[in-house]
Image (cartoon, rainbow, N blue to C red; front, side, top):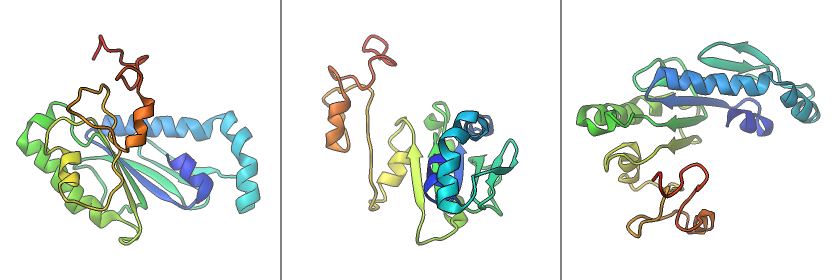
Length: 193
């Protein structure tokens, strides 16, 4: 996501958060491999030059952060991990609890509280930010349920792997993505679900 965002506004800062520091680091490695690739430079250097007068360059990168020459960055952390002193425009919250943690009231509450109290104070601009939650629903009060229960003005995308008659697809137009009630029959065929 940050690489795509940087094409539109190169100074954007993104925070990528998961339940596990290892999982977050894996995502960071994949992001770094994009900007390190010759294909990236071939496809996008001219776009950055035309828009900003110079190509995008990564001037700092380590296991937890990528910083570009336009002061945009991507950092990763985990629930309960280091985030103080860091601020972002976009928060990508990918699986804030593991499947095992989702069954624990204590772990769910820890993730929900950390989301509400800690990440909310890390916004560069409290009146203009984006939170993206990515997860499978594991409990009615997991992070998605917690956020949905607040009745905020949000755009909610819900794509169950299989339509059962008791679940729903949101937005409704996404129903076109299903074949015989299955979202992705190549990755998760009916017999696997």
